[in-house]
Amino acid sequence: MRIESRLAQMGSQSDPVTGAVSFPIYQATAFRHPKLGQSTGFDYARTKSPTRSVLEDAFAKLESGDAAFAYSSGMAALHNIFMLFSQGDHLLVSLDLYGGTYRLLEQIMSRFGIIADYVDTNDIEAMTALRKSNTKGILIETPTNPLMMVTDVEKVCGWASDNGLLSIVDNTLLTPFFQRPLELGADIVIHSATKYLGGHNDVLAGLVAVKGVELSEKVAFLHNSIGAVLGPQDSWLLMRGMKTLALRMERHQFNATRLAKHLQQHPLIQEVYYPALPNHPGFDIQNRQSSGNTGIFSFKVKDARLIEPILRHIQLIAFAESLGGVESLMTYPAVQTHADIPLEVRNQIGVDDRLLRLSVGIEHIDDLIADLDHALVQANKEVQNEYK
Image (cartoon, rainbow, N blue to C red; front, side, top):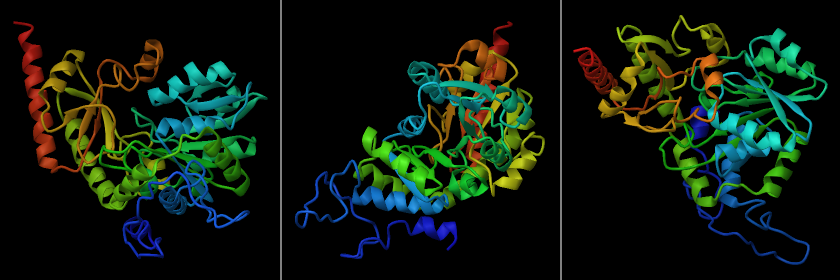
């Protein structure tokens, strides 16, 4: 069965009692035992819940995993995976990185003796030079947020396997509809399901898919022991959102590609970062390992003074954090999503005061172009008036 059908049918054949095509919300934390020594398979909701189990089973299949786990947020999911490592362990991590992940590593996990080095994950020589006797894993974002760097997943995960490292891929921006890292050799795939999977800016969630029975059992133990699990209401909302994932991702990709190409020609824009553009350095890798492109991209304006008026003049596009919803959102990474990354590190990788990130929604493309053009015109007028 193709992925579009799997998505549309999530949970529709899972209720044997009523035949409900929308799987029910089991708002229960405790379940009766038939008798001593027997269980229905559900004992306590932190360990296993009917609505969450349907979501997890479906997601494992979507990502070609042996098991999947639903969490109360993407950061809860990432923290749970980091708990696979122990004091003194060393990780290699993508150079361009979501600010929340950097914060979790540098301000929290470091207190427990887990350390990280940040590296261009396409540079095998650099990774080899940084690998130590205590290096235990590698975390890859591809494409990265916000500079859209693309990593050759198969190549890097093969290198990790050869060196006995656990490979973790953040697949939030492409989703299993466009990319399935476990099929390319990754051990673990992680998602902020709040983004494209949920798709409507109304549910906070994280999802993890795992390859291998032994590793799945380790993650299951942590999932239950730490307990940052997704509740039944949010599990149902997430499934409902994922039923339209295929349609939404196709529209996100179409709109983002059109808008990115439009901005490439704009006189106020210095550079556009989007893997669907032929001049992007990861264009060929992206086309080889993925069947499509995400709905977000970043761009740099030529003058940092344009930033504030652009954000003030956009109307259809909202100035807001997050990404992946049906509504278009614009973010200023330097002061929002990446504010916890030190200034010198941000400037080194290119997340500077001229960079904007645009999560392109499913609105009509002509309206999006008109809104952005209007904001750029108004911003430029204000900047030019400063000289008068």
